[in-house]
Amino acid sequence: MNQHVTAETGDPVAVDPAAPQDVVRLVDLKRRFGATAALDGVSLTVKKGEILGIIGRSGAGKSTLIRCLNGLERPDSGEVFIEGREISRLSEHELQPLRRRIGMVFQHFNLLSAKTVEDNVALPLKIEGRPRAERMARAAELLQLVGLSEKAKAYPASLSGGQKQRVGIARALAARPALLLSDEATSALDPETTRSILALLKDINSRLGLTILLITHEMEVIRSIADRVAVIDAGRIVEEGAVWQVFADPKSEITRSLLGGIRPQLPPEIASRLAAGEGAETILRIDVAGEAARRPLLSELSASVPGAFRLVHGGIDHVQQQPVGTLFVAVPGADAAHLAAVIAFLEDRGARVEVLGHVAGPV
Amino acid sequence: MSPVLFELLLRSIWETVLMTGASGLISLVFGLPLGLALVATDRGGIAENLWVNRILGAIINGFRSVPFIILLVALIPLTRLIVGTSIGTWAAIVPLSIAATPYYARIAEVSLREVDHGLIEAARAMGGNRWTIIREVLVPEALPGIVAGFTVTLVTLVGASAMAGAIGAGGLGDLAIRYGYQRFETSVMVAVVVVLIVLVCGIQWIGDRLVARLDRRG
Image (cartoon, rainbow over all chains, first blue to last red; front, side):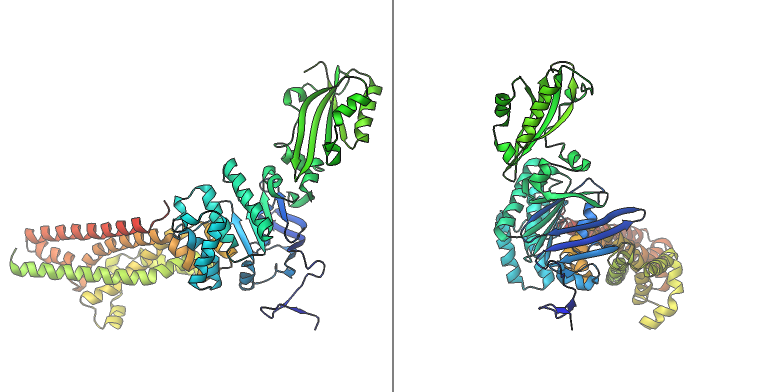
């Protein structure tokens, strides 16, 4: 018989023939709610040990997508492979043992108020039917990992938001999952707590080699911990790639807009004065990333192409240890040949240059 | 108050406590699972089954819409079948339980429905089955409301048991009517009212204390 059999259960299962080493592989996932398509043909893979961030506005389909991965939501069509096993058509009963391989962290923590912190952390093991001594030992170990050992006997109501999420993370790790799903885990937290929770997730990822898939609407989260990012809009993945590359060269309008908050933008008082025709100064947008951003670009420019120019706004940022920069430069004069020389020089050095328009006088 | 009347008062207190306690316990044992069934079978519930939900709801509404004094009489054949007689304290426990069970089921339903859906989702995401969700999430999280609702049910039963005098069940209500009202024994009337106030306050106080201890929601 040409069927694969799992070691533990002996059940015949559909094994992903394409890429058995991928923790998650989604193929053309579709899900409609009435007239709206929450997922409209999503295909994605998550490799072992990586952090994939999925970003999108609210209503883009992120929540539906993440819930398809542990069967809390069922796709209308398409395939969901988790560790090589197709799960989208399994029964609720068949899904239960599989869900223990997948930890999930929630935006609103979802801790049980009637249980102590350690009992919350140990709950996945209780569901697995582990003996109490083992459960408590594992809970103690995990509470130490997330830095909350002294709160073991406390009830969730007495914890701060950041502490609650640490408990949520400890609970998600209790059954030693192969995959951690994070559903807007930091969206209800203040910026400082967000940073500490993200640092914890990154630490768990590198120490335990745990694969993490997170959804968020904040680019800052993606920038802090993701290796790769997928941008979802209206149920489709519109852009996907290494985080620094997407930051350096966003292809879609929605990505640019999501990046708006954390990438340099032309100040509005200049943007409002831009005109298409001629003016005293030409405003250029220069994007550099990787090698091009490591060079002394502006001093090279002034040495090679005579004539003054003025830095209006911008800077070099570091994403995944890669420099990613956006500079807004004003070039004086209406000399088309001079402008062309400036652009040619910059493009020759690996920068992307865009003429935004002209302004009447210095700003 | 004469010693005879005093003894009668003591016996009536015992009969009221017995009727309230026994029918309260029975309504808890049957009403809580019924409340769970109402929540579980409802739309979006952990065992969604709208037909079962509608039928259960209709039965509960049916029993709840019959005035207790009528239920008391209408259930006489059933009471005779279960207890062997239709007269006395134990006979009153049957209609009291049957009236209190759907009442308590609705109260328990409200508490169970208030459990945050995110908690149920979290338990499902951990690989929990329906039984796990009931045992680890629904009941423990709703417990303060379940206990508070049980307190309300007991107090209501104290009142309802007064009517059980109509089938010779005795109890404080019966004593107040027969001695306090019909024989103009004002002291009996006053004593019954005082005892009832103490009884109801006591039940409420214990219930409130229990809820305060159980409620960890902060």
